[in-house]
Image 1 (spheres, rainbow, N blue to C red):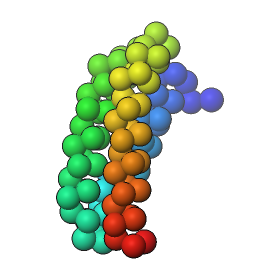
Image 2 (spheres, helix red, strand yellow; image 1 turned 90 degrees about the vertical axis):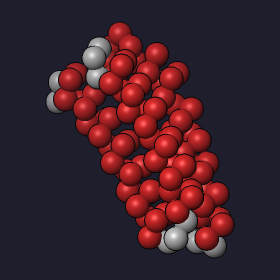
Image 3 (cartoon, helix red, strand yellow; image 1 turned 180 degrees about the vertical axis):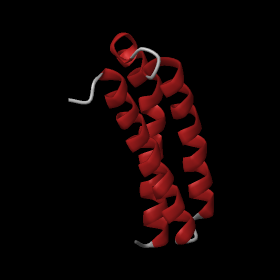
Image 4 (cartoon, helix red, strand yellow; image 1 turned 135 degrees about the horizontal axis):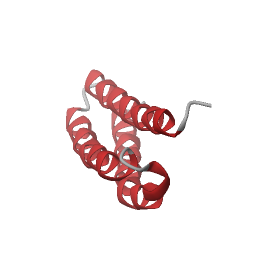
Length: 88
């Protein structure tokens, strides 16, 4: 519906914006260390998004998933630990 390039950008922006929003929420509930760790885990994702996915999403989708997915999963783990630590 959007085309390959636009869909790739939507995908990338949704992941990054929501993770940055979660980091902002963690700062808001005074879980600053976890927020910093989450932000540091977002940086490699952005790098891999630029290196692989945005340049050629059809050819590099598997490379992108293999490279960036571990950082996304660790980011979710960090978020879960932060929320558990905060008692939320």
